Image 1 (cartoon, rainbow, N blue to C red):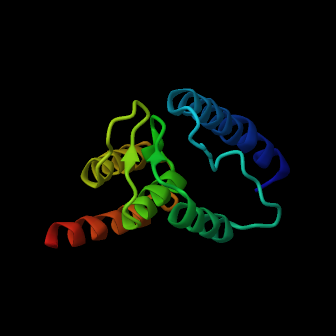
Image 2: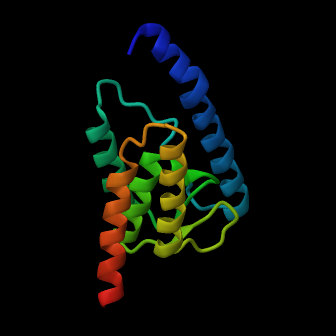
Amino acid sequence: MTKLGEQAYHRQLLEVNVAAAKRFAARLRERLGSVLVITPAPFVAPRWGQKEYLAFWETLLRTRVANVFFNDDWQYSSGCAFEFAVAHDAGLPTWDAQGASLSLGAGISLIERAVAQMAADGIALNALPTNLARLRELHGAATKE
């Protein structure tokens, strides 16, 4: 990616998403009171690649988190889909932006629609299909129990 491309990416996507995540976390803090609320969006670890970043958040989810909330339109984010899969694999309750329970099946449906829409629009899917496959495996295992 060129320097100009990186700057445009940060301005048009990353900065917008980080600001939205911070606002969402602030609303959750107001709603939940003294509960600790963390958000991955503004976290930056210099020299970390995506692999290290996701491993860190997976460990945090599995060891330090009791509930996972997802902001509106989370299903378009490969990172959020990964976190949704980890949360369900770890048995953590998941919630939508309004505080309603977000089941594994509902999350899969949201991601399926997002993947179809993004593919139709020619938008790069990144790891969404991989995370969707992982969620489908989890769903299959859950329905066999």
